[in-house]
Image 1 (spheres, helix red, strand yellow):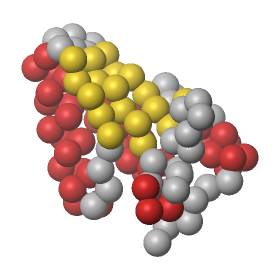
Image 2 (cartoon, helix red, strand yellow; image 1 turned 90 degrees about the vertical axis):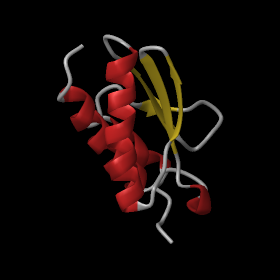
Image 3 (spheres, helix red, strand yellow; image 1 turned 135 degrees about the vertical axis):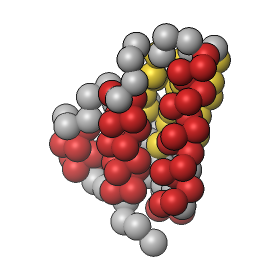
Length: 100
Protein backbone atom coordinates (compact mmCIF):
# COMPACT_ATOMS: atom_id res chain seq x y z
CA UNK A 1 0.00 0.00 0.00
CA UNK A 2 1.14 3.52 -0.77
CA UNK A 3 1.78 5.76 2.23
CA UNK A 4 -0.42 8.80 2.82
CA UNK A 5 1.37 12.16 2.64
CA UNK A 6 1.60 14.42 5.65
CA UNK A 7 -0.33 17.69 5.49
CA UNK A 8 2.94 19.58 5.04
CA UNK A 9 4.16 17.28 2.25
CA UNK A 10 0.80 17.66 0.51
CA UNK A 11 0.93 21.47 0.73
CA UNK A 12 4.52 21.49 -0.57
CA UNK A 13 3.57 19.28 -3.50
CA UNK A 14 0.55 21.45 -4.34
CA UNK A 15 2.86 24.44 -4.78
CA UNK A 16 4.21 22.64 -7.88
CA UNK A 17 0.78 21.60 -9.21
CA UNK A 18 -0.88 24.60 -10.87
CA UNK A 19 -4.65 24.66 -10.48
CA UNK A 20 -4.84 21.99 -7.77
CA UNK A 21 -5.98 22.68 -4.21
CA UNK A 22 -6.87 20.85 -1.02
CA UNK A 23 -10.45 19.71 -0.53
CA UNK A 24 -12.04 21.21 2.58
CA UNK A 25 -12.90 18.60 5.19
CA UNK A 26 -11.22 15.76 3.34
CA UNK A 27 -7.70 14.47 2.70
CA UNK A 28 -7.92 14.95 -1.07
CA UNK A 29 -6.90 17.35 -3.83
CA UNK A 30 -9.10 18.83 -6.55
CA UNK A 31 -9.03 20.77 -9.77
CA UNK A 32 -11.59 21.97 -12.28
CA UNK A 33 -10.57 21.87 -15.93
CA UNK A 34 -12.49 23.99 -18.44
CA UNK A 35 -12.17 23.29 -22.15
CA UNK A 36 -13.48 24.92 -25.32
CA UNK A 37 -16.33 22.44 -25.72
CA UNK A 38 -17.65 18.99 -24.80
CA UNK A 39 -15.55 17.23 -27.42
CA UNK A 40 -12.33 18.63 -25.95
CA UNK A 41 -13.41 17.81 -22.38
CA UNK A 42 -14.32 14.25 -23.34
CA UNK A 43 -11.05 13.83 -25.24
CA UNK A 44 -9.17 14.91 -22.10
CA UNK A 45 -11.09 12.36 -20.04
CA UNK A 46 -10.36 9.59 -22.55
CA UNK A 47 -6.63 10.33 -22.48
CA UNK A 48 -6.58 10.50 -18.68
CA UNK A 49 -8.53 7.23 -18.49
CA UNK A 50 -5.71 5.45 -20.35
CA UNK A 51 -3.12 6.78 -17.89
CA UNK A 52 -5.32 5.97 -14.90
CA UNK A 53 -5.98 2.42 -16.06
CA UNK A 54 -2.31 1.78 -16.78
CA UNK A 55 -1.36 2.94 -13.27
CA UNK A 56 -4.42 1.26 -11.69
CA UNK A 57 -5.30 4.53 -9.99
CA UNK A 58 -8.62 6.11 -10.90
CA UNK A 59 -9.95 9.64 -10.32
CA UNK A 60 -13.27 10.73 -8.93
CA UNK A 61 -14.56 13.02 -11.63
CA UNK A 62 -17.60 14.69 -13.05
CA UNK A 63 -18.18 16.12 -16.50
CA UNK A 64 -20.76 18.71 -17.49
CA UNK A 65 -20.45 20.00 -21.05
CA UNK A 66 -16.96 21.58 -21.26
CA UNK A 67 -16.05 21.29 -17.57
CA UNK A 68 -14.33 18.36 -15.83
CA UNK A 69 -14.18 18.43 -12.03
CA UNK A 70 -11.61 16.07 -10.51
CA UNK A 71 -10.93 14.88 -6.95
CA UNK A 72 -7.93 12.68 -6.20
CA UNK A 73 -7.32 10.59 -3.09
CA UNK A 74 -6.00 7.08 -2.53
CA UNK A 75 -8.89 5.39 -0.78
CA UNK A 76 -6.98 2.44 0.69
CA UNK A 77 -4.40 4.88 2.15
CA UNK A 78 -7.06 7.22 3.53
CA UNK A 79 -5.82 10.32 1.73
CA UNK A 80 -3.40 11.86 -0.74
CA UNK A 81 -0.39 9.81 -1.78
CA UNK A 82 2.37 10.09 -4.37
CA UNK A 83 0.06 8.20 -6.76
CA UNK A 84 -2.39 11.11 -6.64
CA UNK A 85 0.37 13.62 -7.29
CA UNK A 86 1.57 11.60 -10.29
CA UNK A 87 -1.94 11.45 -11.74
CA UNK A 88 -2.44 15.19 -11.12
CA UNK A 89 0.82 15.92 -12.97
CA UNK A 90 -0.28 13.71 -15.86
CA UNK A 91 -3.66 15.46 -16.00
CA UNK A 92 -1.99 18.87 -16.09
CA UNK A 93 0.31 17.73 -18.89
CA UNK A 94 -2.60 16.34 -20.91
CA UNK A 95 -4.65 19.51 -20.38
CA UNK A 96 -1.70 21.74 -21.31
CA UNK A 97 -1.37 19.89 -24.59
CA UNK A 98 -4.90 20.92 -25.61
CA UNK A 99 -6.02 24.38 -26.73
CA UNK A 100 -8.60 26.19 -24.65
